[in-house]
Length: 226
Image (tube, rainbow, N blue to C red; front, side, top):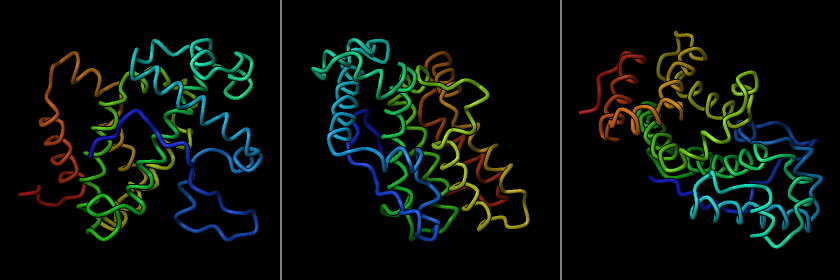
């Protein structure tokens, strides 16, 4: 499954404050207060800006995305872009969050083997492949939007995928330290490493997929796929 740079403007609904927190809500990205405060016109403006930024990336790469260029493409004032996203990194991170919502929807409610209905081991294998292709397709964006080291692992999108992998591991190897094992697996899917392996070392995606399947088998003490 491939993940294109063009993202949907629709975000999953956020739970109301009085609702009990269910597992599916643990993966929601971004702050609840921020999304609930968006008025309808502000939400439309946000979607318009993100769509303009996505078009610029598709045409010119992440280097072509500046606050001025996005404002011109969306036909709004530059101040509007700064007020909504703060700076260029904030804008790029918002684009990644939209992409993360698409992946999140796939592994939470999409068809198996990535989504529910497949054995947890199959879901874990499929998750890694989906992450690999998503990262490759959006590699420039991932690298340009990389948060500073002290914020990287606390970003909502990283916490979301980390929790998902941890839950799958707890079903496969319940006696292991699944939280630490999840971080080990996610390190294999790091965009900077994928950039190095594919663009600098020339490794084909087939080798990375096979490496992921082998790593999962070794971490979970299971047989590799036939």
